[in-house]
Length: 382
Image (cartoon, rainbow, N blue to C red; front, side):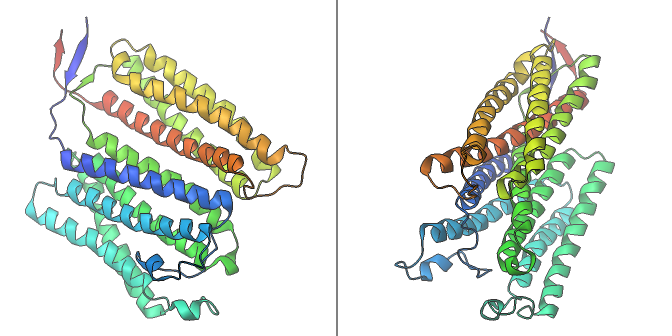
């Protein structure tokens, strides 16, 4: 006997389309960023901020391959930002009242406007000699003030939607986090270039980690916006244990990500050890979660795609991780951070991207499991 809980919420097809487009673009952005780290070309052009069309105005006979990768990365960042802007606008348009819709639109655009004002407060010519003195402090404060005030209102609106148990509260909250995340990631990437001489490579390490988190948020938004035809019923024990394992995997992967970016950017021995130990922990939790989902009484088929993806991706990630480690730290030669061959670049880049995919899949699975566990609706037997 198979019990199914009918799903009858209002669907959000436009938000789903925008979310999946955003996820693909952010993955492309992440790929380019990974290549920049692999080849260590993040500082090929210390000028920031640059317009989306900046590359077209340059002398094409001078820039290196790294220069093109860096600036294409910036262009894709702009495009990703606009896609996520569409995603959050469509999600907040699901609000019931005209007043809340208009207020949300103004505040969403206010965040973008404030960030744009803050970015234009930098004199790029002066910045090469005096990064701090090149900033128009008043203009910077006004821009950031508008952005923060608008973001605070949107966050208040999202929290209020949760309190009132509104239908799209979770979707709007994730879309908002994705929007704020991609903007913060863009600013962090710019500051990593702009302030490199003052603060060193630490910002690059943070930038690399948060990029994967933003991708996971966008992928999670896409999952929530894409409603299935029906939710399966979970047994009481499954409702308790499956969400716990799912979120435990997400937490373990976040720690693993922290050690990974430190190893990738600096190669510290203590981070290498923690990263290896973390790999065993993640593999164990993935196995535990997969077995639990596969053994679910009624939800086995519903969770099957997540079970397959988690198992396949973690298997590939372990293989790539071993090869990336041996190619970087076990050559018997002095450590060279940047890739010196196409093979090294391919393995390191794929390893980083597979890690991002694993985090995104785990986050999406945890969201879906929690959604299934908490959903209450009419039960039909078939």
